[in-house]
Length: 432
Ligand SMILES: NC(=O)c1ccc[n+]([C@@H]2O[C@H](COP(=O)([O-])OP(=O)(O)OC[C@H]3O[C@@H](n4cnc5c(N)ncnc54)[C@H](OP(=O)(O)O)[C@@H]3O)[C@@H](O)[C@H]2O)c1
Image (cartoon, rainbow, N blue to C red; front, side, top):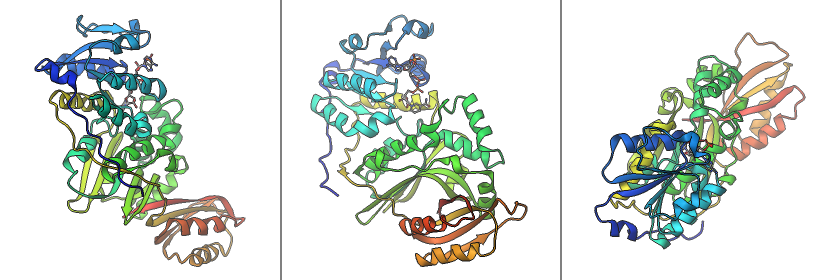
């Protein structure tokens, strides 16, 4: 691990100082799900510290809403809005390059930025914070992870005094909706179609079900909690697409259910992170989260576990986090500046595993698997085979005692060479 970088400290913006008691002038970039909810809160709640002055969107005519006061300027010219005297640009358009360009321009001009853009923050957050600090502005992104749940301010402020050693989170509402429905007996394709109909999943769901969205969010939380700067691309996610109703049935017999979990832990200087479907104990908080809810557990050295949970997405919950960031800016409140250092991510967890095999049944399969695991010094905890499945496509489960992820990967690679294997063994971490 390299030397920790200095915390990025911004002086109070000169624009804010010179404004005195005047409200912060706010330009909204993007009037979609979250942007329109932010406008709604600003218009309805009328916080005296905040004044919505501009709304920028492409083809803006189709966006205009009669409940937005006539004092607000609608525009489809980003540069023209950036050239005005607005104090804060609220970036809610999404994406990396175009949105990143607006954010940079705003910060270069000494304005502050509030964004919910996890992609931008996970890849460019450090650079943007440095730019903000150099130009006297601030960048806040409390809505970028877990929408309306104040996990980012909670880590930055409430838990800054602890040494967080472990993070576990349900960070993707789409996956949680799908898996918590499959838990009740539905199959993946049916639930995905329902999620798409309800607007919880994109037409191309890869970003969510493939784990890419969750790993971007995990990398942001790792910086604030574990104090490491990591490249999200180094976290190799496992998609939830291989999970079948059979796995939920076996998981239940083991006192567990299945959730997409993003987890990271620091152990002495060693850092490991993973995103994918995992078995969680039915008695654990992770199993309680249903539908599109999110949850984050921060395991602190001094304070123990702290659990954040609630609505991780949706226009209004996410907008609450954005408006809270705006109010914090208006009050000049500065977060605790947390130093962080660049770090490489490993994949080595010492954890129990659930392994589901799908085989053409024949004598000697269990004996061969046992030998393969024993060669890597992995102890079997249980072998479970439910009746009622055909011998030519027989699913059964082996659970193993905590072992190194790399040792299990080697063992399963060998076992997978057996000609009775219909598909590669499904290997899931069991969180205990
Ligand atoms: N929705 C959530 O629950 C949620 C939760 C947490 C974080 N976020 C983050 O919040 C941000 C906004 O999400 P959202 O759900 O509100 O997205 P959205 O509904 O698609 O809204 C984005 C808005 O920005 C406009 N826009 C996009 N690119 C533009 C461009 N190049 N020029 C001008 N206007 C452009 C879109 O216009 P068009 O209508 O023409 O496309 C749309 O009105 C994203 O970064 C997202 O990751 C969302």
